[in-house]
Image (cartoon, rainbow, N blue to C red; front, top):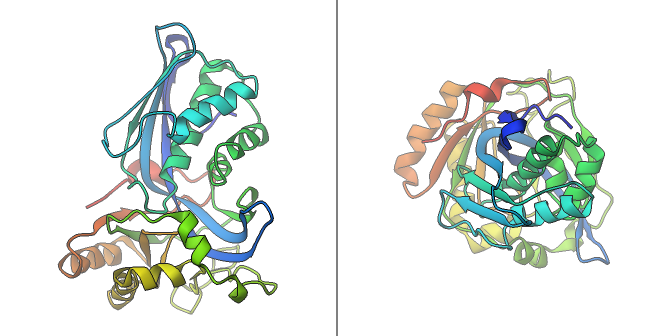
Length: 315
């Protein structure tokens, strides 16, 4: 796979730099708990222009060591980092991965439900695939990524997808709305396991379909009720952390077409019709919730969309 998210690289010199975007769950329905302990979901997921950058380099040292470093000291750099597991998963698939050094320039807040760790893991796998010259097909990378984590396969699709099963069944979606997101992170890391355990699954056992926020042609009027988003995981989280629900409501007061929690939290996003509206809301939210870290981002709908190259803003 030759990823378009490879920013630059020199295979002969043994290094590559890969873009690793965050994701938003625009919709998230939890259908049932599976015997494996995972949960069956339906979710509309989209990569956004808030992104980490991951540099992978072949180390001069011999052996098969994996050295991980990050400019965010809160990120673990040992074997509990998904990047380490990603390298091992590729090696188990037969991809030659010699001693490596990995540096993560972190911009996606850790523990915020934005998929930063999974995206970094996928970026490393893309980088190793590039450096090895194997050019694995997307499906092979997705299967290897699934051994690392349920969200990892999504980041090989490089566009909006409907995710089903435990998140590994991915159907690309052709969507083209030109909108902006204002993403807020309160500095709280929430355990995904705890959220799912607290969820009252009786509310979602019935047959359900994702409440799609717009049609696939992308021509639903943004102010005509087309952004009816849902996240089943909000119910326990907003009880534990009322400030998250208050943040959602404040975004709507400030002009968001819709506002929801992404994934299992704790990040909240608002959907805005243009950059000016999102920036005005960002200015308004600072006085209401000064402790929140704020980011402006755009969706990366399709694999042909190159808008991310000039949009990676924060506060």
